[in-house]
Length: 57
Image 1 (cartoon, rainbow, N blue to C red):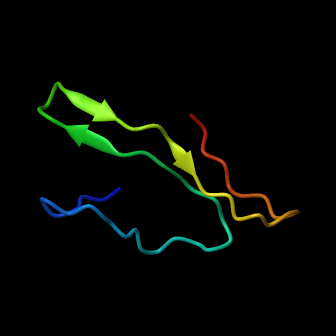
Image 2: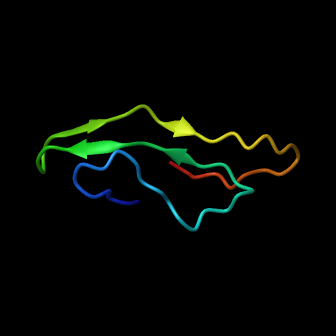
């Protein structure tokens, strides 16, 4: 989780494992009760035979 500076259009997430896949979603908070969410996008590293850790929802 991270927060870009006001007006920034990019954000770099540090500390990720280059062998794993990750899913990301951008959430814009207008207030404590109003938020807009983007579609979730996931990486596809293309490594076969190396399963990524899964997140239980």
